[in-house]
Length: 385
Image (cartoon, rainbow, N blue to C red; front, side):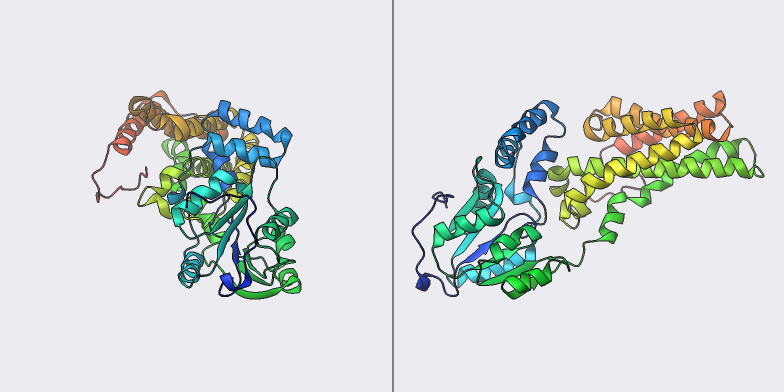
């Protein structure tokens, strides 16, 4: 596989393939993610490298992809491959069919995937100057295989530029609006549809089971024995919602930045982003929206400043400080305490020194338990790593 390249080759003779070459798209088709977005996220914890890569965007998307691929660590073995499609490709490869990987991803990324799988005869990819998508991809395919009829495996509207020149189409999770256009452009030979994508996957990524931690906002009201203060309970409900929205935004951001590590973890590899059930683009769009909604709701309660501190500290904990035992424990305990402080600000029942002291000791103990390393197979309890 070391000779794989994206340069033009001699046209493939029609008899060289049992059913014509099978040209396969990478992002969203062969893998259930986008490699450019993955490389971007991999640099999220390295601001200088990220800014330097983004600065290359002024030279075009192909150059941006080249810089991102060069700066980010990339492990093709950890990618969430489309298992059903991969099985089909292996069957076709065993029958002697010519397989071509044609992608808008950077050449280094595409060649790493091709070497890992050992299935592809040729690789066509962006080279730092040409962004190989749509019509540019069709031109590269024709330069490579000549006029031999081919079948193209794709997943999005962008691929229509290739399907118009293909003899057949294999659709992977193609949307209902795109499918008719594909059928009009060529013959649809087969479709691969994932069943675990959509609203359920997004809800799972929000981690609603962890919202139970935000019930701490009701502690000041319970401690003050104000059971009949309906406005106070209403204000507590609003700040509870604000914390849930903010926390979910932080969870999305953290999961996006920990994709590579999560995929190597036996349990976390099943999370929506790590498994490919949810495209990372959804998280990039949803995380800032949730954070802004949380801040807007928090502003209505008068506890915006504390909510901002909570969001900043949560992000710092998730992205950088979680691995620092002492700092991580103290910050985690402080995050629990911030909920009580914000609730007191929102409801008009500020926590007493005694309540803050007692709760602080309890939260410190819980934080230590959460950071205590567990043996494989030990139950994790309600506090998740």
